[in-house]
Image (cartoon, rainbow, N blue to C red):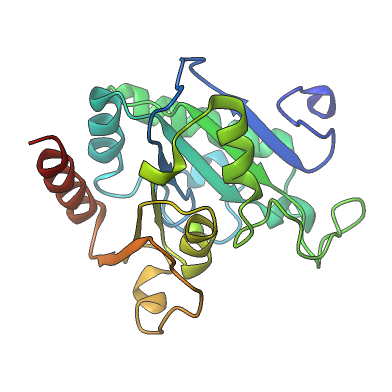
Length: 221
Ligand SMILES: [Mg+2]
């Protein structure tokens, strides 16, 4: 029974999964939104047959793997809260995502998800849950498990609300990528306080990777 799955860390609406179990103490993380960033946006993705990687996802994740940068998938899943699909379907989608990544030598290190939403059905009907982006609870939960250095971490999202969650914890870097909802989002200004986080818009995951490569080499060289 999926409800007894210990990855559902509160037994209801929060998913926290350490896929590779590596020691991440003090490392920066690469936080990636899932739908519209790693996977094509299909609207409430709950079916394995709809799992399609966005161009560049394998290269971006594979690059982070080779750099020793942990890759964290961070995803609001109100589709579960709304009753469109369940954790079992979510797990099946994640398995297919893993399969497609690993076929090309890339892998995700951590997955964190929140099913709560104000329009959810009981027991998922919680307004403004601290884990739901733009709140930073998912990021903080991963940090607490792995002792990542958030001040050197980066997040890639296709919505400003993704980047807001990163800004709230003082991440170094946020990129809005124009995949998924990103092309639309890029037309409207963001309305949160970026603090010390540097924010840019990337046309694609390839461009995001080029930016990270350049910044990594200038930081180390
Ligand atoms: Mg998204």
